[in-house]
Length: 322
Image (cartoon, rainbow, N blue to C red; front, side):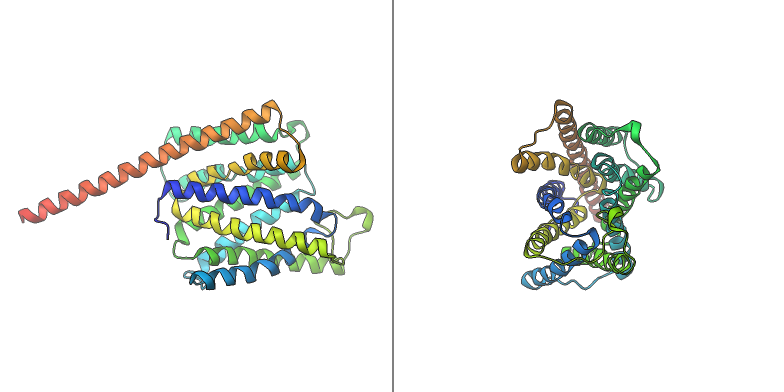
């Protein structure tokens, strides 16, 4: 088990999660040529849920929720954020959709201050803002082509950020398989409803997009790629859930920016596509931002531990005098 507030462990888990997820997301493009988004999500869920049951059985952990309302709220928030993000990929350029989803750390900070009353220092705010600036440099969204649909990726980021806070503050007792199971089950059920709708009320073929296609015949290649994507997504979702329980939410959220760094690396390794100078600058800013957040979080934990030790010593001294 990982101790709460284990900053280094949380960072390592978040980085491993994003490395895996950014690799398996490369399978989505060829999958989209064979089936729609909702069919893909349903089949991925059917692959992922048995995997999670096996993992829970092998490691002797339970998937039974300790706090069902909190787990349901967290699952709905995270699943909704991811589904909105996937859906907007059919409406907007990837740069705009990605920039909106990775606004999650900003939403985490806003929710922490407004809803939880958390005090955040100026250096942490500046580091988080720098991380988001790095995302914009990497993605380079076309600000001259923004529309009302551009709000949807921001909604995805807000929902994902809300799910991160719920993970940290209300789902501490839940196992990683339970947290992942909740997200996949929610995405599967929601996708099944949408799949049935577009199957029985099909969109004309000339107007179909990735997120408006109904059920289509499946071939072995589709099943194999979906299975591989499910394996990676299961591992990544489980790892990031543990990371959010182990470290501060805003710190782990900034570590998730590394998804974009790994995505650039995998794009070069798999497809031979390199990033430009501005994008490389964005990667550097992201790495610096994450490092600053790590240092700030580690120093805060040390001060808290020193205060706890001092308080214990004072308490023992008072007891000995009484």
